[in-house]
Image 1 (tube, rainbow, N blue to C red):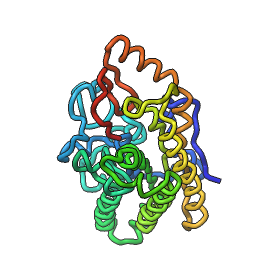
Image 2 (image 1 turned 180 degrees about the vertical axis):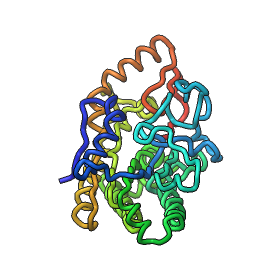
Image 3 (image 1 turned 30 degrees about the vertical axis):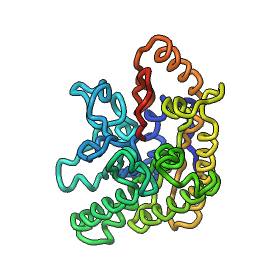
Image 4 (image 1 turned 60 degrees about the vertical axis):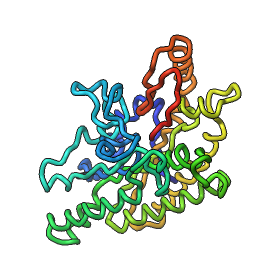
Length: 315
């Protein structure tokens, strides 16, 4: 079965993620993790969207309000959990790429078209192309492909992707055809099949330690709630139900990788249950502060809510 990371609530995830990953990839007390490569969307983006021609950039307040110098391009008040894993990592020399890289991009999806309505973004396929370039540079630094493969096989590959394939694709039928082409069940199968091929690409580039993050409660985000309504429920149930189909198959994919990709050690990060344990109280706070008092509130890692809630949300 998939090795599953679950904690009591979301607030502890960022603090414990790195220690859990290091524990799982520990051999005789010695860390086997010299490097980390990160793939995904806004929840892990450390500022890659800043230079792109897109509306999915957050180089303005209140984003970055917890940083002394203000916005950094992160879809958050301050650090996101990629920063906790590798605090404020930046390449200062050619050899620094041996320690890893963050390829993530707000609005990115497993499907190339996801998020296109708001401008440029670095899809997972493009992130993999960027990784191929970095791998070629690592081969040059280390001298040959064998040494590079040995190094890369010890790295962790954190992948958090799929939110925009729902929020900025399937559940925006005015712009995308996927909801007319696929049932929620079939769509989850199509996404997982594509993700498996993308992870096969990583495997072919010597990735052996994969950490796959389950999707969160998309149907509980203020934008989706304001757009679709909830019929008295805390969240938009049909969106969350569709996401759970993906999550169930993602866990099975982890088992598949461990069984069929030689020497692979994959783990499954369960943040759905972490979020669901606190979402009801969170939404009560939103309703109180935003709709009754008219006070804008920052929610989660990437959403700033005002009373109107008119703009789309990037993930």
